[in-house]
Length: 197
Image (cartoon, rainbow, N blue to C red; front, side):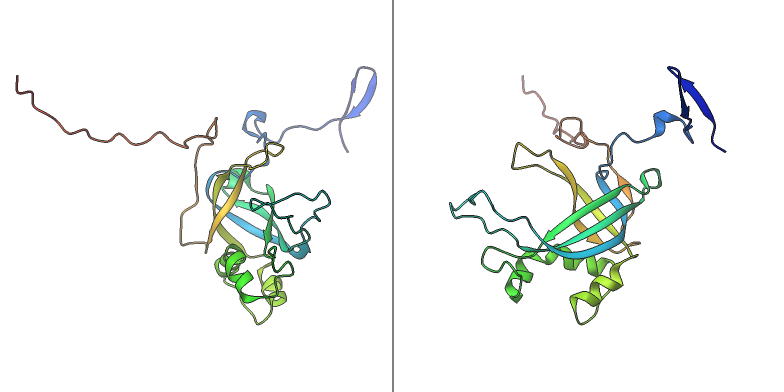
C-alpha cells in the first residue's frame, strides 16, 4: 500500500528516492565517450516532407520524405546511466534517390547503419532480416558532440562510430561545460634552450 501525505490540505501519494537524490541524472543525453547501447526497436520510415521550400547549400529545394531507419536504443553501460533512451535516425535516402533504391546511395549514406549491424554481429539476405536479428543486441558506440547547424536546435551527443562489445572499453568523458574541449591537453615538454649570454 502506498504511503500518503498531505501537502497544502490535499492528500497526495508519496514517492521516495531509491538513492541519494544528488546522484540522480538531470538529463537524458547520452554521455560523451565510449558506451554500450542495447537495440530496442528498428523501423523503416521517412524524413519529414519539405513543406516550406527550404533550400540546401547548393540553392536547390531540399527533397523531403527520404527513407530512413529509426533505431531506438537504451543505454546499457555505464551502469549509472542504464536505461537512458536514445533514438537515432539513419537517413539513407538522398536528394537524387529518396527511396534509397540504388547501391551508391547505400554506400554513401548507409555506412553508419551498416557499421551498427556489423557491431551487433548480425546479417541476412534482406534488410528485414538484419533488423529482426539486431533487436535485443548490444553494440558499443563512440558518442561525440554534434554541433547544430540550425540555431533553433541544441547541440546533441550522438553516435559517430559503432563497435562490437569487448573490442573497446566503456569510458565516459566529462561533459564540457561550454561545448569546447573535453579535457585539457596533456602538458607537452618544451625544449630546453641554453642562454648564450
